[in-house]
Image (cartoon, rainbow, N blue to C red; front, top):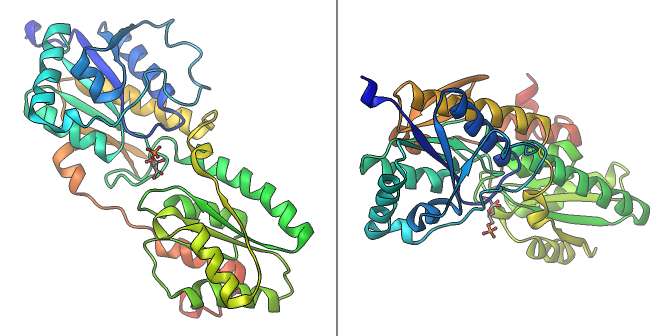
Length: 335
Ligand code: F6P
């Protein structure tokens, strides 16, 4: 069985970066080296595998990474890797560098690439990292906590000035087509209304009536959090102006949410996921994604993982509303 031993693996980060990706790279490299496996960093995601763009990693070269945002390996969304010819080049790079496996750190797009590569005979293990938390097979993706905390910090600051001037604010957060980030942030900042793509009440009920109820309850400043997948903050602001005659300030938090030092949760989760990814390869298991389910680490076959769906938990939405409006909207939820 000696010839089956994994001798060298590659690690890459792909898609939108997320705080904690570096911590995952460090964990992959140090775990591999502990197993006696060489670790090669592939730069610029799947494109780097096509271009043979690499950097050997040592225990020392991945030092001081836990607190660093972004990714030292750079990242990309490779169009060429979506083509058969591109993937063939990537397989050749694996042969040239003698890579017996790849750890791919990213989101769903990264894992679709991983599935294609695994079908060409390259063993791959995925580690979920995206601020959107929208990967179906795992409760949690690296970067989500850091992005939420960054958005919360921004909104707390916006609220200070909104309160002083008794104004309304509309803040757009990222999340692609999912509302996880918006709902978590909206709950944590005590938003007057939160717009998420998964929950489509009409605008009058969801926003206008809530601002009115807030005003009637004595509040003079209002915070509306919009998931980018639920609409554009400027449109939301215009509609509020039309209905209520007030002029909200608009803030699109944007890429600030993707940067910055990762939180403890992201560093710790990235370290554990990186460790388990290498352990799977070292023990001869591959073509899986590492996930967390009910607090435990799980390995799910990529094909199955890509079919899994994760839904926004509506009880969380209701709890957020109860904090603002008591049980007017959700008496059924309190019985
Ligand atoms: O997937 C992470 C993410 O930040 C999304 O929240 C957002 O929709 C997208 O990436 C933005 O991508 P880009 O940086 O290419 O504009």
